[in-house]
Length: 198
Image 1 (spheres, one colour):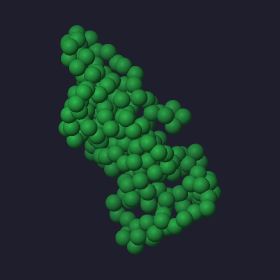
Image 2: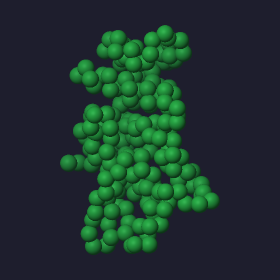
Image 3: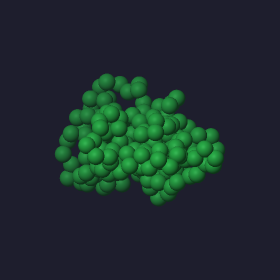
Protein backbone atom coordinates (compact mmCIF):
# COMPACT_ATOMS: atom_id res chain seq x y z
CA UNK A 1 0.00 0.00 0.00
CA UNK A 2 1.50 3.32 -1.07
CA UNK A 3 2.04 5.85 1.69
CA UNK A 4 1.06 9.49 1.21
CA UNK A 5 3.13 12.02 3.12
CA UNK A 6 1.22 14.60 5.16
CA UNK A 7 2.25 17.88 6.70
CA UNK A 8 0.69 19.80 9.57
CA UNK A 9 -1.16 22.81 8.18
CA UNK A 10 -2.60 24.12 11.41
CA UNK A 11 -4.73 23.85 14.51
CA UNK A 12 -8.04 25.64 14.83
CA UNK A 13 -10.35 25.74 17.86
CA UNK A 14 -13.57 23.77 17.66
CA UNK A 15 -16.63 25.98 17.37
CA UNK A 16 -19.08 23.30 18.45
CA UNK A 17 -17.14 21.39 21.11
CA UNK A 18 -15.58 23.37 23.92
CA UNK A 19 -12.00 22.30 24.54
CA UNK A 20 -11.56 20.52 21.19
CA UNK A 21 -9.42 21.45 18.22
CA UNK A 22 -9.24 20.52 14.55
CA UNK A 23 -5.76 19.36 13.57
CA UNK A 24 -5.48 19.91 9.84
CA UNK A 25 -3.09 17.74 7.84
CA UNK A 26 -2.48 18.25 4.13
CA UNK A 27 -1.00 15.91 1.54
CA UNK A 28 2.50 17.02 0.55
CA UNK A 29 1.93 17.16 -3.22
CA UNK A 30 -1.80 17.71 -3.45
CA UNK A 31 -4.71 19.83 -2.29
CA UNK A 32 -6.52 17.37 -0.04
CA UNK A 33 -6.87 18.15 3.66
CA UNK A 34 -7.42 15.68 6.49
CA UNK A 35 -9.02 17.33 9.54
CA UNK A 36 -8.85 15.33 12.78
CA UNK A 37 -10.66 16.44 15.94
CA UNK A 38 -8.34 16.28 18.97
CA UNK A 39 -8.43 17.28 22.63
CA UNK A 40 -7.03 20.45 24.16
CA UNK A 41 -4.09 18.73 25.88
CA UNK A 42 -2.90 17.07 22.66
CA UNK A 43 -3.39 20.32 20.71
CA UNK A 44 -1.27 22.11 23.31
CA UNK A 45 1.43 19.42 23.11
CA UNK A 46 1.58 19.77 19.32
CA UNK A 47 1.53 23.59 19.38
CA UNK A 48 4.28 23.81 22.01
CA UNK A 49 6.62 21.69 19.89
CA UNK A 50 5.78 23.50 16.64
CA UNK A 51 6.51 26.85 18.34
CA UNK A 52 9.64 25.40 20.02
CA UNK A 53 8.45 26.46 23.47
CA UNK A 54 10.31 24.71 26.30
CA UNK A 55 8.00 23.99 29.27
CA UNK A 56 9.35 24.18 32.83
CA UNK A 57 8.79 20.44 33.26
CA UNK A 58 8.61 17.79 30.54
CA UNK A 59 5.16 17.05 29.16
CA UNK A 60 4.05 13.44 28.59
CA UNK A 61 5.25 13.42 24.97
CA UNK A 62 8.62 14.91 25.99
CA UNK A 63 8.89 12.17 28.61
CA UNK A 64 8.26 9.56 25.88
CA UNK A 65 11.17 11.02 23.87
CA UNK A 66 13.51 11.02 26.88
CA UNK A 67 12.49 7.44 27.68
CA UNK A 68 13.18 6.39 24.07
CA UNK A 69 16.60 8.07 24.07
CA UNK A 70 17.59 6.41 27.37
CA UNK A 71 16.69 2.97 26.01
CA UNK A 72 18.34 3.60 22.63
CA UNK A 73 15.38 3.47 20.31
CA UNK A 74 14.02 6.04 17.94
CA UNK A 75 10.83 6.79 16.06
CA UNK A 76 11.04 6.35 12.27
CA UNK A 77 7.59 7.51 11.14
CA UNK A 78 3.97 8.11 12.09
CA UNK A 79 1.19 6.48 10.06
CA UNK A 80 -2.48 7.46 10.19
CA UNK A 81 -3.36 3.86 9.49
CA UNK A 82 -7.10 3.35 9.73
CA UNK A 83 -10.51 5.01 9.93
CA UNK A 84 -13.35 3.06 11.49
CA UNK A 85 -16.78 4.53 12.23
CA UNK A 86 -15.41 8.05 12.00
CA UNK A 87 -12.50 7.38 14.38
CA UNK A 88 -8.89 7.64 13.18
CA UNK A 89 -6.19 5.20 14.29
CA UNK A 90 -2.43 5.65 14.08
CA UNK A 91 0.81 3.72 14.43
CA UNK A 92 4.20 4.84 15.73
CA UNK A 93 6.97 2.98 13.89
CA UNK A 94 10.02 2.57 16.17
CA UNK A 95 13.51 1.14 15.64
CA UNK A 96 16.07 0.02 18.23
CA UNK A 97 18.98 -0.55 15.84
CA UNK A 98 18.07 -4.23 15.34
CA UNK A 99 14.35 -4.56 14.86
CA UNK A 100 11.38 -2.43 13.98
CA UNK A 101 8.38 -2.27 16.31
CA UNK A 102 4.94 -0.76 15.69
CA UNK A 103 2.93 0.83 18.51
CA UNK A 104 -0.79 1.60 18.23
CA UNK A 105 -1.74 5.15 19.22
CA UNK A 106 -4.29 7.89 18.83
CA UNK A 107 -3.30 10.16 15.92
CA UNK A 108 -3.02 13.19 18.22
CA UNK A 109 -0.52 11.44 20.51
CA UNK A 110 1.36 9.87 17.61
CA UNK A 111 1.75 13.25 15.90
CA UNK A 112 2.77 15.00 19.15
CA UNK A 113 5.50 12.35 19.53
CA UNK A 114 6.42 12.34 15.84
CA UNK A 115 7.13 16.07 15.68
CA UNK A 116 9.45 15.72 18.68
CA UNK A 117 11.48 13.19 16.69
CA UNK A 118 11.13 15.25 13.49
CA UNK A 119 9.83 12.25 11.52
CA UNK A 120 7.42 12.14 8.56
CA UNK A 121 3.67 11.59 8.93
CA UNK A 122 1.95 9.31 6.42
CA UNK A 123 -1.48 7.99 5.57
CA UNK A 124 -2.85 5.94 2.68
CA UNK A 125 -5.10 6.60 -0.29
CA UNK A 126 -8.15 4.86 1.15
CA UNK A 127 -8.20 7.16 4.20
CA UNK A 128 -7.65 10.31 2.13
CA UNK A 129 -10.34 9.20 -0.33
CA UNK A 130 -12.83 8.55 2.46
CA UNK A 131 -12.07 11.40 4.87
CA UNK A 132 -10.04 13.92 2.91
CA UNK A 133 -11.47 17.25 1.87
CA UNK A 134 -10.30 18.86 -1.36
CA UNK A 135 -9.38 22.50 -0.89
CA UNK A 136 -10.51 24.45 -3.93
CA UNK A 137 -8.65 27.61 -4.85
CA UNK A 138 -10.74 28.83 -7.80
CA UNK A 139 -13.86 30.06 -6.01
CA UNK A 140 -15.38 33.31 -7.22
CA UNK A 141 -14.98 36.20 -4.75
CA UNK A 142 -18.69 37.06 -4.84
CA UNK A 143 -19.63 33.45 -4.09
CA UNK A 144 -17.23 33.45 -1.16
CA UNK A 145 -18.67 36.68 0.23
CA UNK A 146 -22.21 35.32 -0.01
CA UNK A 147 -21.16 32.09 1.66
CA UNK A 148 -19.53 34.03 4.50
CA UNK A 149 -22.65 36.22 4.88
CA UNK A 150 -24.93 33.19 4.94
CA UNK A 151 -22.75 31.47 7.54
CA UNK A 152 -23.20 34.47 9.85
CA UNK A 153 -26.99 34.38 9.70
CA UNK A 154 -28.58 32.91 12.82
CA UNK A 155 -30.37 29.62 12.42
CA UNK A 156 -33.04 28.09 14.62
CA UNK A 157 -32.07 24.54 13.58
CA UNK A 158 -29.01 22.68 14.88
CA UNK A 159 -26.12 22.21 12.48
CA UNK A 160 -26.80 18.45 12.35
CA UNK A 161 -30.40 19.08 11.31
CA UNK A 162 -29.25 21.55 8.68
CA UNK A 163 -26.96 18.91 7.22
CA UNK A 164 -29.64 16.21 7.18
CA UNK A 165 -32.12 18.49 5.44
CA UNK A 166 -29.68 19.99 2.92
CA UNK A 167 -29.54 18.84 -0.68
CA UNK A 168 -26.30 17.46 -2.11
CA UNK A 169 -25.73 20.75 -3.93
CA UNK A 170 -26.27 22.72 -0.70
CA UNK A 171 -23.87 20.43 1.14
CA UNK A 172 -21.21 21.05 -1.50
CA UNK A 173 -21.66 24.82 -1.12
CA UNK A 174 -21.51 24.52 2.68
CA UNK A 175 -18.30 22.47 2.34
CA UNK A 176 -16.70 25.09 0.11
CA UNK A 177 -17.76 27.81 2.55
CA UNK A 178 -16.28 25.97 5.53
CA UNK A 179 -13.01 25.38 3.67
CA UNK A 180 -12.88 29.00 2.55
CA UNK A 181 -13.24 30.10 6.18
CA UNK A 182 -10.76 27.44 7.37
CA UNK A 183 -13.48 25.88 9.55
CA UNK A 184 -12.09 22.38 9.22
CA UNK A 185 -14.18 20.79 11.95
CA UNK A 186 -17.36 22.04 10.27
CA UNK A 187 -16.00 20.81 6.93
CA UNK A 188 -15.37 17.37 8.43
CA UNK A 189 -18.99 17.11 9.62
CA UNK A 190 -20.27 18.14 6.19
CA UNK A 191 -17.94 15.62 4.55
CA UNK A 192 -19.27 12.88 6.88
CA UNK A 193 -22.87 13.69 5.92
CA UNK A 194 -21.92 13.59 2.22
CA UNK A 195 -20.19 10.23 2.74
CA UNK A 196 -23.31 8.76 4.37
CA UNK A 197 -25.29 9.51 1.22
CA UNK A 198 -22.79 7.95 -1.18
